Image (cartoon, rainbow, N blue to C red; front, side, top):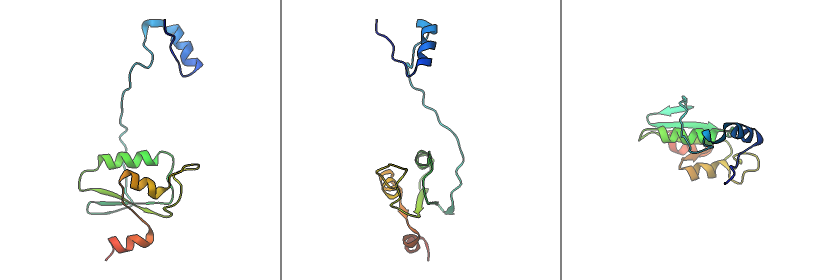
Length: 117
């Protein structure tokens, strides 16, 4: 009989108590957390978010926002320092993350040429 692999001793203890009456980590259940997002600036269908740094969980949040937007809505970032790392020890910086995820990004200097008259 194959022994079950548990993630920790506590789960192993409970697994022994439950025996074969329960399956261990048999399947995954996707879930959605409904939150509200307030963009920094809005003009028509363009949403602008100003970022000096990404907090823990921000990259997932912005990807979820992008996936929930209705065309032609677009989320655009203005980055204080595009070369700033996503987090300590990360190889990717903020601008690289934006490009990888398909977000347009600007700096204070470059946004003048695009969104102002």
